[in-house]
Amino acid sequence: MTLFKTLFFGSLLLTYTLPTLAFDYLQTLPEQPPIPADNPQNNQKIALGKRLFFDKQLLGINSKISCNNCHNLAEGGDDNLALSPGQNGKTTQRSTPSLWNIGFQTVLYWDGRTKSLEAQTLDHLRNPVISRWPHIGALVDHLNQSADYQQAFRNAFPADKNAFNGISGANIARAISSFERSLLTPNSPFDRYIAGDKTALSASAQRGIQAFNDAGCLACHFGANFAGPAPGPALKMGDGFYELFPNNLGSDYEQQYGLINDAGLFEFTGNPGERFMWRVPPLRGIALTAPYFHNGSVATLEEAIRVMGKVQFNKNISTTDVQDISAFLRSLTGEIAQKKHHP
Image 1: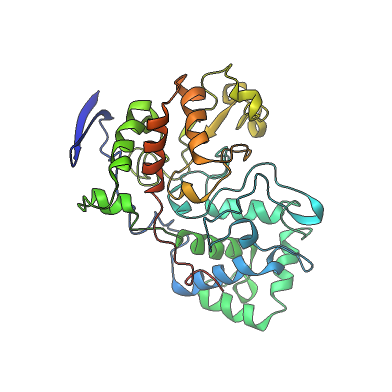
Image 2: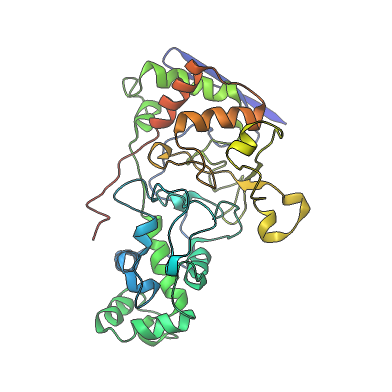
């Protein structure tokens, strides 16, 4: 059973079908993402997570990179590279995604294989491309040598009696994840527009909302983070919202941009039914995160729109619609508190 929902945006009329479960396809960014019961937010924990995020020694005594090298919080939350440089001349398998608004993602990584930020953080710390530590215990021992870190962990986790000075792999992950959940980009032009400020969007961006819907994009890219259902009745944290990419096989873009060189979730699970399945990526802040797609193969937002039209829907999106959709997507760039999130 479906319901029809109609929205008016100035002179623009949008009509589309919605599942019976109530959620808005177009909505402002909520004030905060879902917070897990076993990792409640507090200021001390967020401050500790921030410190770890910018500390190169989190990733090894001789590490030349911190989390911020790949996830630059002074800009789009990524590094604007196709693949990211890691430790000892290694590079990442896929393009680094943005961390802004990541707390709204129900699963993590491009392929959605990890169910929580905490699990993803521990996975990073075990990954030799990212971390130089032989195991997480070595990192814990290193942090325990710092009186400052000892106090910071005790302040952040005062009730934890099972970890010496509160320092453990689990608490490192909890602190970093708490910090990442604080990374929000509210008050975008789009947010102001649907909240009632009809001057917040250009005429092109307003047309772009309709063109985005007409092209079929809204079927997957909707909700608080334009990545599918907001966490709630329709989708729980840890439940993935996936799409086949490419969906329309055989276009010239496949070879041009290497779109079928990586089989998505299948690479992790080996399940033939998950070949070319990917977590639907969020679109907030997308104007800041070129190059695009899991392999960083597409340099511009406009070209990414053309590619998506063809490989997902077998549509050649007109130049005018590409420009309008681009204007709409650029309106999803919210406020980035650079000073707040820089050491």
